[in-house]
Amino acid sequence: MAPDDPDGITQTLTRLRVEHRELDQAIVRLHEDIASDELALKRMKRRKLQLRDAIARLESAQIPDEPA
Image 1 (cartoon, one colour):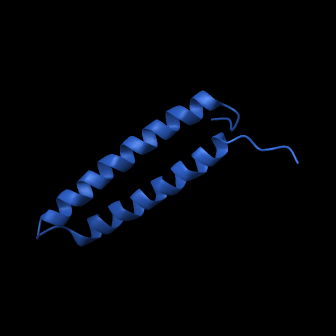
Image 2: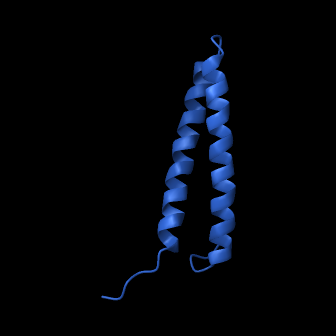
């Protein structure tokens, strides 16, 4: 994906947001399960943070730079 490809960025943002939302739901379900796997929960949370950072970077890339 080229940084100047708005359609590619939009598609990637949509995919990342969906994955982030699905991870959030999975984390909530694991929290409700008392016998949940702590390691799996930590990995999901770490991935969720990575997705949030990637989403923020892509959203920032969509904002045009102002001329100096």
